[in-house]
Image 1 (spheres, one colour):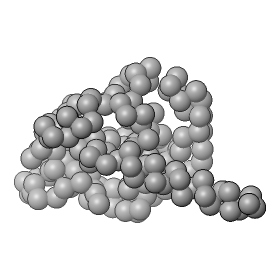
Image 2: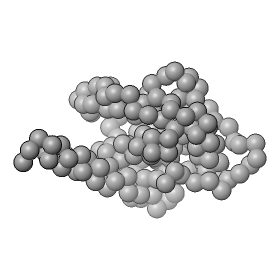
Image 3: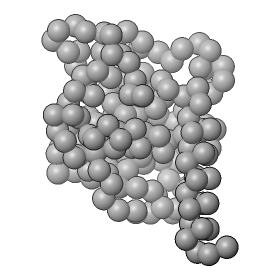
Image 4: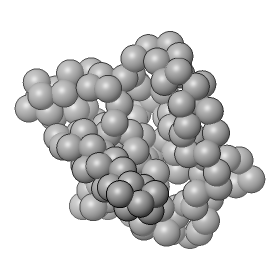
Length: 163
């Protein structure tokens, strides 16, 4: 196996792991997408990692946390944020492993996504019961209502999580 083949194989395994970990965690992923967007929109020059999205860095993420890679991936694919570089994680359970650092790419896209996610959480303020049974609790705050977001002025609650 060549180094390129090994790298490609590893990348495919990582993507499969993220998808597998994200299964039945749409509410948690959407909650963290909203947090990430709010942090970046509040301070457009700021760079964030998924470590910035948890309330307690020492608390382990339920299910191993592999699903958390879906948060910046989905926002990046939507065009709201862009990858900057890898940095060492601040979470002890990650043993200083690499985590991506992200910055705002398109402010208008980010605002549109934030407004849609805010509306989604107005309609769905708590994690669905079936999802709680499958995933347990995560390290973040249970309700995005604890974030500094506002309801869109048009009252639209039809938008859901980013797909």
